[in-house]
Length: 222
Image 1 (cartoon, rainbow, N blue to C red):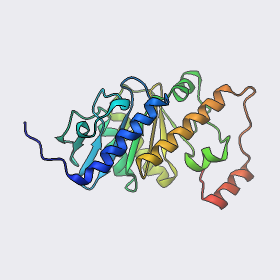
Image 2 (image 1 turned 180 degrees about the horizontal axis):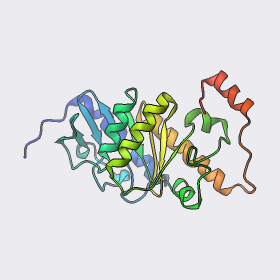
Image 3 (image 1 turned 120 degrees about the horizontal axis):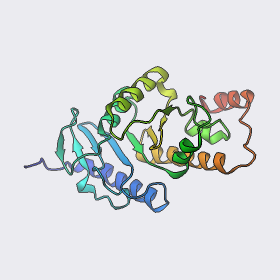
């Protein structure tokens, strides 16, 4: 089966995906073949291959798919492609979607989240500013199309306020304007989960006045 030549203007995006994947892997934020990264192009999407280790990605092996999800070049795309595509449809300003099985966030769902509407309370200002409220989605098998529909509906209901969701027993999905921004949001969310799980007694959430100050000063929405 022949594939079109990979356009030269894709290479910076391909290199960014590989760099971010390697960074996450080397710092233990992803492991084995868990997790996936995609980027929205003017001509479809780039996404990591199914069952690929994010620490050892090769630029020319990333899957390039068209707007309908059909593979144009590279290896077979991640089974979460439908979820990524639905996020891009619901959030046109998004350029990167990142999904991991980060340890502390998955542990949080196993132990019990703060609430279904917000897996963590607002305990640090950067959590509020960089990530915001993160809802929990009930467990579904990996790649279940119902998850994609549910996330699409949540984004449509919340608009720009929603930047991440948590998949029960699987891990977070975050989206942003670039791979670096998505990685930063994931890092902030995972570190907040680590703080919440390790602090004893549990810290008090930021007050309503403090949250309003963050909104006035930085446009942060909780």
